[in-house]
Amino acid sequence: MSSVPSTFATSFKFRASAVLQCWRLLRAAVARRVAVVLDACRVRESWSPASSRIAPARAARTVAAVALALSASGCAYVAVATAPAKPSSATRTALALQADAVFWQTLHAGRYEDIGRALELKTAAYLENPGDALTAAHAGWLHIWRLAESGRLAQVPATITNDAVMARKYFEEAVRLQPSEARFQGFLGSALLAEGSIHRDEKLTRRGYYTLLDSVAAWPEFNLFTAGYSMSRLPADSARFKEALEMQWRTLDLCSGQALDRLDPDFGRYMALATTSGPKRACWNSWIAPHNFEGFFLNMGDMLVKAGDVATARKIYANARHSPTYSEWKHRSLLEQRIAQAPDNVQSFNAVPGSQGGDAKRQMFQTTVACMACHQQ
View 1 (cartoon, one colour):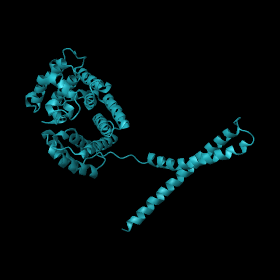
View 2 (cartoon, one colour):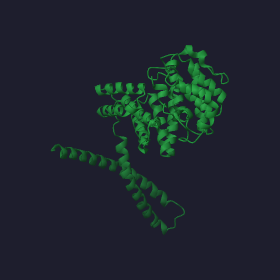
View 3 (cartoon, rainbow, N blue to C red):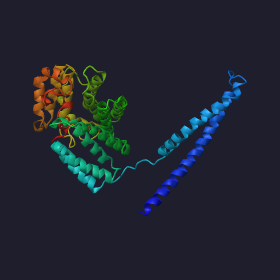
């Protein structure tokens, strides 16, 4: 207990010293600004001899009042701006590695009901080492998964929307700690869009959109899908939805290495390009996303159906069958159903969110496999 007063005193002395120094700097700057203002006031031709004896004094009082307000906020700005950056950790703790194992087991098995357990471990690992960017990103991912597939719940609580806030917070931390990781940036943009939509906050929504564009510039093969998928829920006739659909076509152009024939978009001719390294690895299945390829074409087909292009949608859906692991994909029956029911789904996918039936009548982004279509083993 005796250390508390000592710590408080040290902190108080530091703050007092910082405020005093800041005040001196601001006072000098304001004094110079006041002199300039008064000089300008004296030479204005519109002043009469009588008013010239009063106006400078009034101007001085006005500037002094503004200076006083600026001094307080200015000190706060200086203090925050000069604070040291949060350090990124170069090592990972044993708890973080344990949390990693549980995270991947939960995600790949599609155990939505175990998100709470995985999140508890991830949060504990983050609190133990808040400089771990990967742990922060995984925590964000668990929050966004719980929100995205909340349709699994018998009753969806209003508090589920808090997961959007927490996802955004953790992805912000991940980006701050590892700004070169474009995937984190894309997930941050997606979380911002979700939070902005929930709270009807246009500033957050715009920030999310431009964050997504930055992530696309950093890694287009990965984030064109992330950005487009995040905006696939928007009305089919909106500019953003049309942009999102175009992003899917651009992904295929990048992955195939040429402009794909949109009238005959058979991707089978490009399967020999599959790779597990470099930027184009995002085009194919991987350990992280065992059915990324199939999930991509499920979503793009849904977007085309929503846009009313049933014929092209069926061709895009069929591309998922080219995957060498298609027979192992747990959600292939959903895709086959999509092909058969594509004409009927135009109306379903354009219906008011929440008014549709089960997954068969909802576009992928609104289903209970919004994440698992790609990530479940």
